Image (cartoon, rainbow, N blue to C red):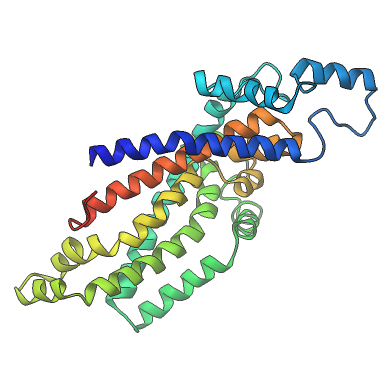
Length: 307
């Protein structure tokens, strides 16, 4: 297992470099630049700006100037729009907001989704099964940019129970609506994956053997069936949790959260190259690490899996 983890971590380094290179190339190929405005800028000023940032040099010199600080010190440079602020500082400031909301949303989705999915599998073709899967299909069908405004309309503008937007800390009422909006679609997917995994496991030979030995149904379900039945959920958790922890653009825009997703969309609109590269690289690193944790969890949940 240790050799497997070390090998995966070593593969992560060139993968991140490829992601950074592709991001740098796409940003340079896209039309426009960060100093573009509605009013035309004099040619002399444009030339001075290019000279200041080294954009008058050949493309390989520009690439080396970007990639070398990242390789040496993991330094993505200074934001072009947020003057005087490094990319690392912006990520460190915005990440706790995205991570807090995303983690709470996924924990809620896990609890609700696994519960309803397990009930649906244990009561297959019953009213509980049909009702759970109908709600799951509804959750998958309605995007969060529709759910968010609806929740604001009902609970903020009509009932006045919670504030409609802004961020006042993790334990404030402002976090309720973003968490509910984010968790809805993940609840639905987890419920369906849990049901499918549980149905397959409940029909297996070792479950029939456990029941024939006289084990209580609760022990059969929790200690044997649920552990193997959650394998699809574990696979889904890796990339889903990575994207939730690193911010979701739509929800953060709806609820005016100063998270990583909000900074990412602003950086894209502003053509803030260092900030775009830094956020993309951070998301890629998080995704690769989450997938590694998923592979480790496989070996824990299923003793037949060995690396």
